[in-house]
Image (cartoon, rainbow, N blue to C red):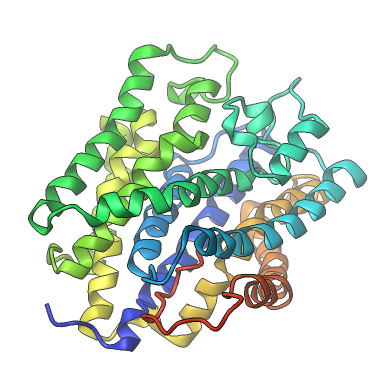
Length: 385
């Protein structure tokens, strides 16, 4: 495969996909927390759209960090760039969440009746270490969507060690390595299923055949999500080596949609949270990257979509506090469409402000090399995801 142009090396279609994944998480959370307030259960497919989007983020993170790695990078510079990306937005939104929960009395709608979150758990969330303890009262502390950032921090910590290992995989073994990593993704829910029973009758997750601890271990525990990140790293090697299947973005999306609708009928929910959708997610990322490499026309990489992709991190962080606030002050009486519309109208401008006033300035100030940076390859859009 001929080397892509500098413009295409930026893989802007991945930014567009990142925005849609963030929006899918938003829709999932509107459905889930509206159902919690009403004492019901959300649609299985809407719930799985959110969990699949998180898996997409983890695989994408491994892909873009590997693809955009600079030859002049040191571990210290890489970690500084990652921390400058993650913490400023997170700490600003965490402060807003603390004001809502502790100051204004907005309830934590994701907690079971009778359970509580301590100030210690909230502080652990501020430091992004809370999901290292796979107990929901601890893992759901602070801004609960930030649990995924704890996983990201583990990935970033291990990346300088993992990259040389992935880089040494011979080209002819990349596809086999990808399938082996997918097998590990499937192995995690299998081991949890074999070694742990289902939840008690009163548990929120008992209705879908799992316990609180099973959900926390499979979905929120950082080491359980590491194989998805490693898969993304291998996919990046496959992309640069040209060892990619001829799958179109639309075909990958159709396969993903079919999995979300048919999978719950055939598989236990523990396997639907991560394992069942990981192959369609991988094919979607490869297809979008291949589209950019070919220079083919794609509406995913228009300037508007790239900008929305840039906003996705701030939007992801702020959207749940906004939803919880809207549900609280509306008394939970609005229809889900109204809750979604008002929440989106509030969360989107908040994401714009976070990007313009916090994220970009902090990246410029803290992520650059203190000495004059060496010229390197263009960065992939989404490197800072």
